[in-house]
Image (cartoon, rainbow, N blue to C red; front, side, top):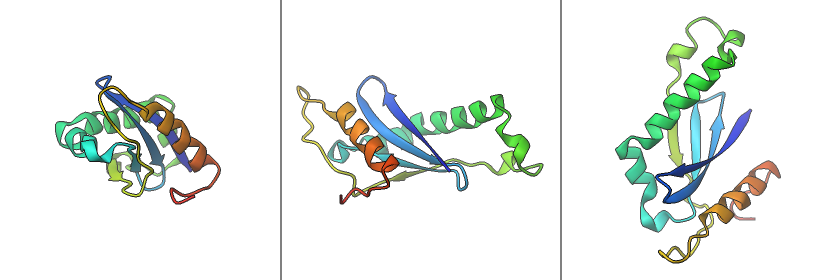
Length: 116
């Protein structure tokens, strides 16, 4: 089972995140990899903050009740940079990342791959 999240960090760029609830991995689809946003936000702590929020939200809906005691304590969210995601031409005056997030969502829910 997976959950799709559009992520906007500091009103600069949109990412598509896919949380895999069985592995705690979050695939990050970034349409402007040349701008190195993934590395910047991974080391800057924005993704860690997002991972902590995911765990808190699952706590709020009592998601953990369906798992053995201690399962939540092992929940470490890992972020994966999907390197073959389709790319946009990113410039300061042309930001199509929101459109790419929609394309990534459609691709994922339809079962396609980034090569389709």
